[in-house]
Image (cartoon, rainbow, N blue to C red; front, side, top):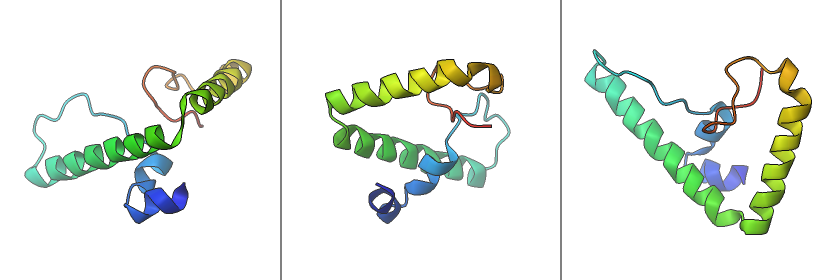
Length: 90
């Protein structure tokens, strides 16, 4: 998967995560261009992942993530949620 996403320059978004900014008021054109490029990479990576993972595989991954989340929830930082797809790391 890393090779596939890396070949399309999308691995960085998967590895680092992407949080949509709440407000872009006052951003320069260069910053807005970087944001737009990052959004495109994020959506492209999601599209590739959706194509690779079938329904049964997705269900297995989802159950695994929920299990890990509820086991380690007390140790997760407050900003880690299951709403959206924020990284579940420290």
